[in-house]
Image 1 (cartoon, one colour):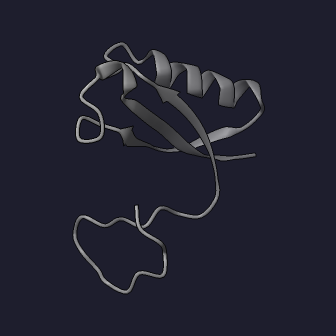
Image 2 (cartoon, rainbow, N blue to C red; image 1 turned 90 degrees about the vertical axis):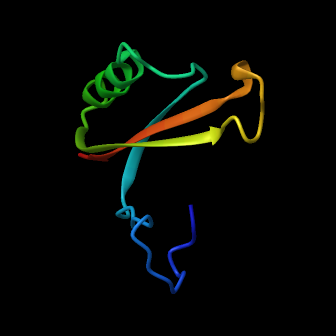
Length: 82
């Protein structure tokens, strides 16, 4: 992630639209069953919001930071509207 005032352009840099986002965090290596995605979408619906996708996935603690799988942390977010 880089600050929005960075003056360079690159094909691998994507601007994330400003807004409100719902997030969920997971420590599993990967969510193969969609449990975390479903939990996030159910929370959004229960709170009266609408998801405005796509999902954004960010590895906060990855294998470069820790070699212990139980320490790895992934954030899943999606933009929401009321």
